[in-house]
Image 1 (tube, each protein chain N blue to C red):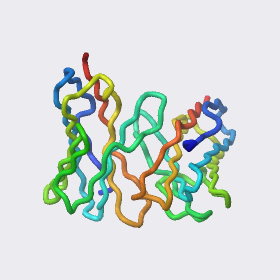
Image 2: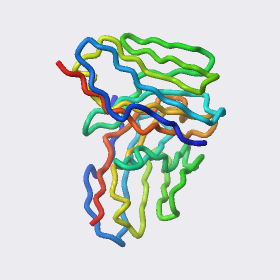
Image 3: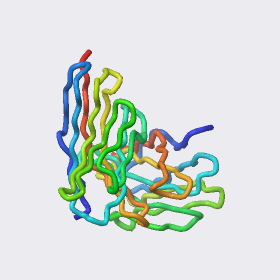
Image 4: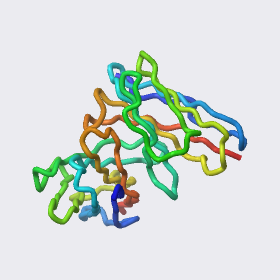
Length: 112
Length: 113
């Protein structure tokens, strides 16, 4: 019940295309869902985050869609660029636990 | 301001030895979390400290331990190293702990031979 399932494991997108990464969870206590981006040799960095009281959040080319009833959320990267090539992690956390549960990661490659 | 620093960046140890990894958080941050990253298991939570107190820990054996000092710097220790402990160990700092944004360091790459 502590797992966060993430798909796909890897994704190849043409420059200018839309990248979509999906995540699902079981634990209804989760109430904070950030996405992290990791480049090779670097630690993960926060990209965008959402709470279950909103169904969508957009920051620039990055959008999180959240479906509370289905316990699913997804990251959309619009107009994908080669510089977006990285590994993306969805994360879930329950308030007061101070513990991030990471998805398994999606390796995104954007072709120029 | 300076980011999270981790030392050493790379470490090679032999089975049975012990190792201590260090993490210096961003100035003013009082929460430090540790994660283990491996290709097979992904990123797994080890423990979180705030003001020298451990607030949560993950499902790791007692060989994994940590502590935090009064200046918020943190160390983690792994005793009796096993081959499976080879991983990238990441620490992250934040002001008060999640859900405050967590800033990750570059990690320490530990190889156990």
